[in-house]
Length: 335
Image 1 (tube, one colour):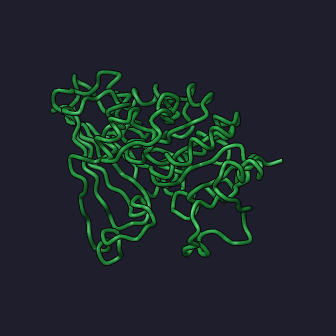
Image 2 (tube, helix red, strand yellow):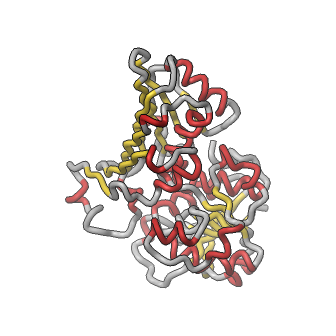
Image 3 (cartoon, helix red, strand yellow):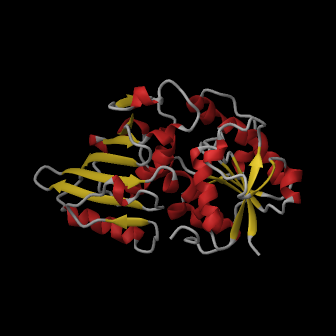
């Protein structure tokens, strides 16, 4: 029998992606949990004859047999519904930023809003499986990482840990994302006429994903410069990361650091020295692809990290975490 998994926010891009993956999963069955009454234009996204539906309440979810929920919702919705689901014995994987920053003070600083469920920070596990797998497996509340930090941390953390980066010279992360990263809700900024034939930077020096990178990578804020940019494609993130190496190294040496770190990781692929990924390589997959180019004479290094923002950056990683907390093979439904 398939295990019912609730999806709140199933009309958004990440929610639709989650429903699709759950529908192909060998162990899970998606259940669409309604948390609002406006139907919207969901007919093109989720067939009415498709997955079961129920109200997004703990009582209705339990009646539907739901054992875990994915929250593809804004932070304020996640804060509102998470306590009830947990009290009902239903595990939660939250795709929003509600529980990522470990304290109400950090949340207020970066999100400019008060946190309404601060008591849950003590048990929320930051769900980057490649580094927090052991904690994820026993958790009942997983805070799914942001898309930009996923690509950045998988690329930067091994190099910081190995002492490869000259931290005094700083690290620059130039990050480009498709429009789906802004969500499905219509705004002037992500309308067709604003995005097409355009390329724009946003949230410069104040992007709310910066503290996630600092929290995991080992870098300090003065050492890290991050700029997010919107490009006119539907999905994908490509980050170009610049730094100076601490000593005489080759690109192959840095590739070796990555190979050692990710040798047994199913969703991180490392390229041969001098080769880098593009977005086509990761589109519709749960992979993070990483490549390195180095000028040995000057120590200047460039790492390119690419993911699909809706899969490894959102729904795919959420189901990777769901597999862990439910005791299934981590790659189930994703390979």
